Amino acid sequence: MRGTRHFQMRRIFVLTVGALLFAELGASAAAAGNYEFLAAPQTDLNRVFRLDRSNGEVGACQYGLKEGAAVGVTLCYPPGEGARAGAFSEYALVASRHTGEGGVFRVDLRSGLMSICFVLNETAVVCTPPAK
Image (cartoon, rainbow, N blue to C red; front, side, top):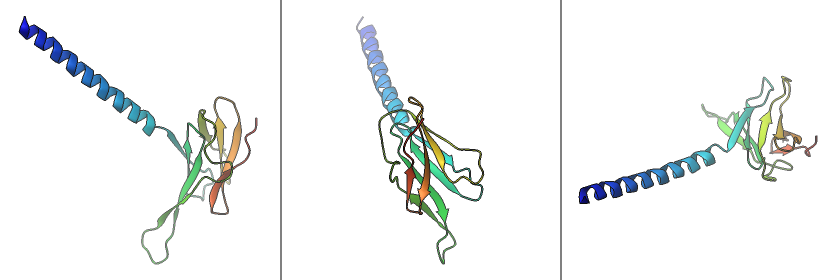
């Protein structure tokens, strides 16, 4: 009888620890999957936009040449006016099919509001005021 009880207690312990680890991994995976990336549709631009899907914050990075170096640098533009974190919602990025367009659309999937985001003067990402 004692052996059976010991086995049951050990099984409960293992299942509890397993459940806790699974929950922790699930929370980490959810936090890690919070960003979306999209290349600008402009065909001669190597810029990628980054979106925080929960608060709509938009940034961008691109490859840049570095004088006298064989390897270039990653140039990143922080969120500026209209591109900073906003209201908690569910956001996505959409590219137009216009091959000369350097910006992307930020859409709020819950409200239907849209903004156009682009890099302004090679200093920061800015977005137009949201509209329907």
